[in-house]
Length: 362
Image (cartoon, rainbow, N blue to C red):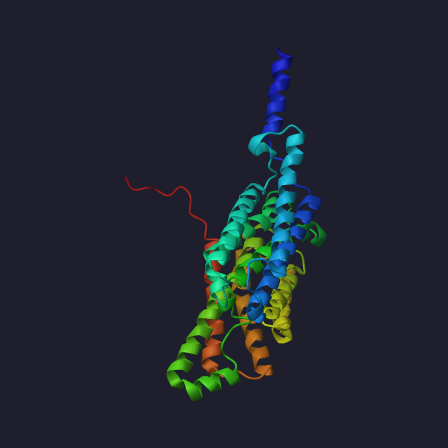
């Protein structure tokens, strides 16, 4: 037997095996990701509240954002360099879950360069235009791919029922991606930007008549149903893979709502309390009933009930905070509609099994 050939073959086989990022590696990655998303929210706050003072691309807010990106990008590339120094080459040097993260580095970098050129040529966007700028959407795409590296790594390596600390990098990665999605849909985020307050709606009735009031009501309904999909997406996705540790969704919903309300100039404690309570309901339901693709009735039940809790609490705190001008049938109906939407989403995430051994027509 040619032992030299055998040894070379074994070395080649080992070289092709993708390395796994460790818990500390993933935690460091997402700490950089949190730095990046903090820069996004700080920049959003500046665009919303300091419009007259932003006159160039080179601002302290962009400094936080791009320094966070630089740190995350350099760390991700170091993880690959580390494996190259161990003798791995090519794709085999990229840790599991970090291939798309490297693509995110390139896309975000391209978006950053484009953003600087865009601002230099067209000036600084204000309002919703800043959320829909093509270069900013490149930043959204690249940033999401980058910060979800620990999520993809955990998807491939973690046990079905991880402990909270073991799950922490994956949780923070999911939270950061979730926050990217909510931030870039701020103009339609139903938990913080819904035109249903008594003062505003009364003003519409007096100044715009029934047509404007009806239009605002439709905007409220669309915002709730649109936001409901984004809220349920991480819940259903994570439960497809894990029995998430207690506290996962309480933390995710509460921290995100703090960030989304701070952009408006202050912390909306009514909204934060309602979001935290909805997350607590989800965590308690998961702990007691263990919904999963194998416990499909429990999985579907959570998808139905969680939106009822989220939006029921939302309208309750809106009422306590000043009242709701929408008709009772409207806001209760849209809450029920959100629950039914959640149920349908659960079917898309975990569809019914396809019967095997069916006869095929000739």
